[in-house]
Length: 231
Ligand SMILES: [Zn+2]
Image (cartoon, rainbow, N blue to C red):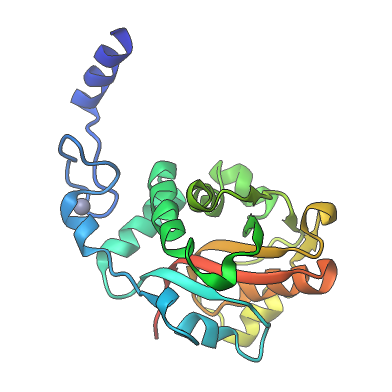
């Protein structure tokens, strides 16, 4: 009884707002309003062989499967969502979208032997500053459906990388290529790992993570991100 009253009181002053458009959520709506839910720009890449995510990694790192849930550039709403899950503490929103991603991954044949999900780690300094890793929240949502292991500290970012914005593809690669090392080899070795990250742009970070897993732990690697920045 009391928690409900407190909750209602709190909501009176801080009503829940949509993570996509800032409107107040109606009763029954969670994280996203009905309109934003319907307008999510799904890529449907998971249904396409050699989709744009997989093509992005051709000749760079051999992955088993790759996809992204949403187009980043086509809708302002997705930019708002990404900002909210990264900086505004919208962990539940990240988890919800992770779950939607998980639903689209659960029947992919080439993912059936995935036994662990690894969220792309933040550098410790950044994690301390921000308080949480949005990729980890996404991974938790994905795993509500896939129900495998999440190996949170499986790889560690050992190099604090500068912002990747305004860097060329080669500069981005130089920036991240030695950024990761394996921390929990026994949990990763010889496994098929699903790497999860929030956004895919040039793929330099994911490429570095995937190569580390393949070269240092003999893994097979697949990649799933929440958003994809199309050219
Ligand atoms: Zn909305």
